Image 1 (cartoon, rainbow, N blue to C red):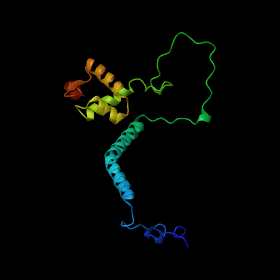
Image 2 (image 1 turned 90 degrees about the vertical axis):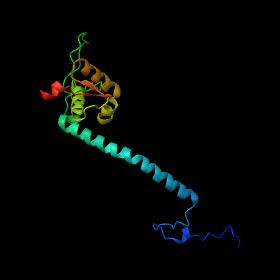
Image 3 (image 1 turned 135 degrees about the vertical axis):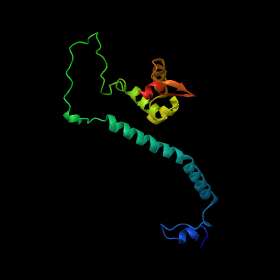
Length: 166
């Protein structure tokens, strides 16, 4: 009988399914894959910790501003408008609009709360904590510095001393 038709009898075939394969049986490719996977996991651990912190922050923010949304079948259909008016009403101040914008003043409140807790924090760090775009954070901080609600501290900002005392 030809040797090509006979099955190989290596250690991998003599081990029942579910049992670990001894190290001597593993090929260099498996070892390399294992080392690569372990190295990548080590690289991702800090990011996983940061993700957990951000989820906690978002959960805390949601508990402060959360609202119960009605189910889709509980919402009445919107009335049909006859004509479009040239006058645009002001932005709603409580709900996120159709355009995805945050309610008026909410970004400012979140930024001021974070700066109060972390004096000297910079825009990129605030963006990382909140998930807001860095450009939104930077323009809001710039406006708050112009109005005196924030003042520069190193590379970041802080609440002015007079505002902290009051």
